[in-house]
Image (cartoon, rainbow, N blue to C red; front, top):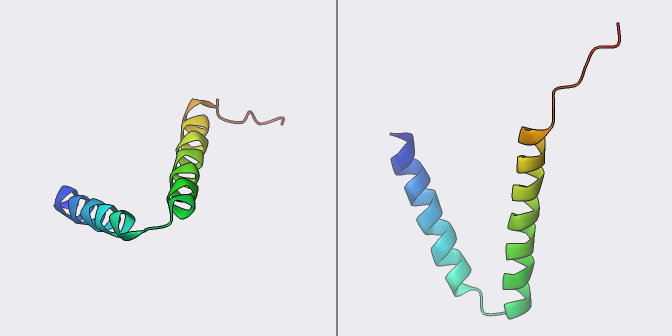
Length: 53
């Protein structure tokens, strides 16, 4: 049932984001989320570190 839990978390995030009135704060949140996604994608595409031994 993880998808149900994830769906509820996503709805909470959407509702909370919609309540934020300050456009600068909204931009900051979006920029942070995009930065985290980029970091995640970079980790997935990097080759695993090679042992030097």
